[in-house]
Image (cartoon, rainbow, N blue to C red):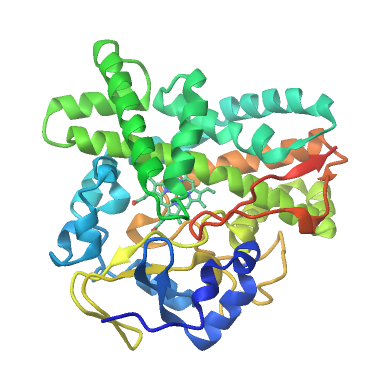
Length: 404
Ligand code: HEM
C-alpha cells in the first residue's frame, strides 16, 4: 500500500518544530490516529495524539517493540542488520519476557529509595557547577549547567570516567538525532565507536571490579544466561543515552517555562515546597520527550477504528496527549500547583521510564538551587531568538542564553 499524502505532514516542518502545540491541537481534533510519511526514514508512521488513545496504545500488548516479530518483508526488519543492531538489544526494544528479565537486572538501582541516597552527591555536583557559573554573569544554561549535571550523575553511577564524557555527548547526540539528510554513515560510525569504547572499559572492570553498575552488570553477564554480551552493551547504551538527552531538557524547558511565566516563578520562590508539583508541570507543559519511541504491528491490528497494517510503525505523541483539554483543563496554562496532573511525560505501561525517580531527584535539586543562587536569572535574548531542535523525539532548545 502506498502512503496517501496527508495534510498533517507538517509534523516535521521547521515551523512546527519551533512550537508543535498548534499543530497537535488540530491533529487531536481532526485526525487523532493518522498515517504520515517520515521524511527522514521514508516510511509510514502512525501518530496518536489524544490522551486516552495514547495511554491505550502504550499499554496495548498487540504492538511489539521487537523487530524480529515483524514480517520478513518489513523494512524495519530488513534494517535491523545494520550497524546499530549491536546496541539495540535493550529493554526499550524488547517485549516480555525479555523485557522483564532485562529491566529486573537494573531496576533496584533506580528505585526512589536507592535514588534518594544520591541526594548529597547530586547536591554537591549542582553546587560545584553553580560555583563556576555564578561569577560569569551570563552563559548558555544548557551547556554550563543542565547538561553536565545529569551526565556526571549517570556516568558516576555506571562507572564511566569523567574525562570521557565529551565523547559521549558527541556519539549519543548523533545517535539520538538521526541525520536529516538520510546519510546514515555518521550514525553507524558513532554506534561503532560507542561499542568499541565500552568493550575496552568492560574488560578493565572484569579484571578489577568496582562499586559501580558497570561492574555489577559485567558480573551478571559472566555468571551465566541472564545477560548476553550484546544485551550488556545495549543496556549501557540505553542508560547513557537516556541519562544524556532527557534530563538536560527537563531542566532547560522547565527554566524556560518559569522565565516566561514570571508570576509562577515568583510563586515558586515564595513557596519552595511547590517544587515537586512544579517539576511535574514542567514534564507536562513542555516535557523533554515529545513522542514515544516506535511500536510496530506484527500483524494487521485494528486500533481506534483504523487498521495498522502488519510491519508498520505507530507512536504516541506524549506532548499532544499532555495538552489534551479532555484530560487537562486549560492545558496551555503553566500552573506549578496543577492537581491532578497525570501527565505521561515519562510514558506509560511496562516501558514507563526506569529513570523517572532519578530525573525527578535531579530536577528537584537543581532548579531550586539555581533560583536561589542566581536571584536575577533572566533570558539574555528575546524569546523569539530561541531555537528548538529539529527531531520529533527529543524536545529541547539548541541553546538557552541567560543572564544573572
Ligand atoms: C526528564 C527526564 C526523562 C524523561 C522525560 C524520560 C522519558 C522516558 C519515556 C517517555 C520513556 C518511555 C518511552 C516509550 O515507551 O516509548 C522512557 C523510558 C526509559 N527511560 Fe527515561 N526519561 C528521562 C530520564 C531518564 C533517565 C535519567 C534514565 C536513566 C538513567 C532513563 C532511563 C529510561 C529507560 C531505561 C527506559 C526504558 C524502560 C523500559 O523499556 O522498560 N530515563 N523514558
